[in-house]
Amino acid sequence: MIGPAPRPPRRRVVLAERRGARRVRTRVEVAEQTEIGAALIGGLVRAQLGLALSCGLALALVFAALPLLFRVTAIAETVVLGIRLPWLLLGGAAYPVLWLSGRVYLRLAERNENDFLELTGD
Image 1: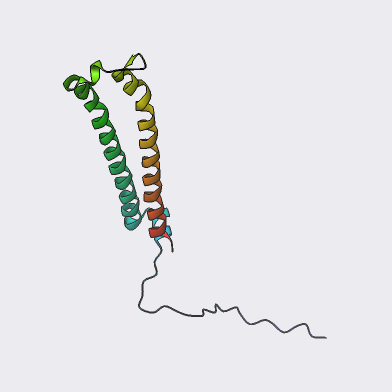
Image 2: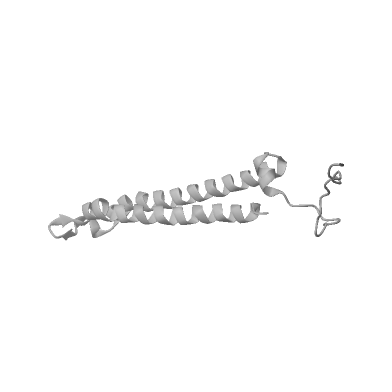
């Protein structure tokens, strides 16, 4: 008795071959740290750094302006609920401002990361 016939070698079947177009492999480019991948990551780092510096500068300007505001205007002498207004602003209003700036920064940083992920999606 003779055994089963030998199978022919396997062939790869492709439904559509792209001709003339370069395949986009951005995830591979990023993972392998090629020139394109390094440029993409560098762009993300620059975007995040710019966002951090701009948010930090805006927050620093707001808090640096407070002593000038207290010195120039009559706010320093205003009393609310038995407490001078500068103490209320520094002790109470500063924390919601910090929380809000943190929320804004987080939302914008996540937007930068989502834009990067959409750019690198194949």
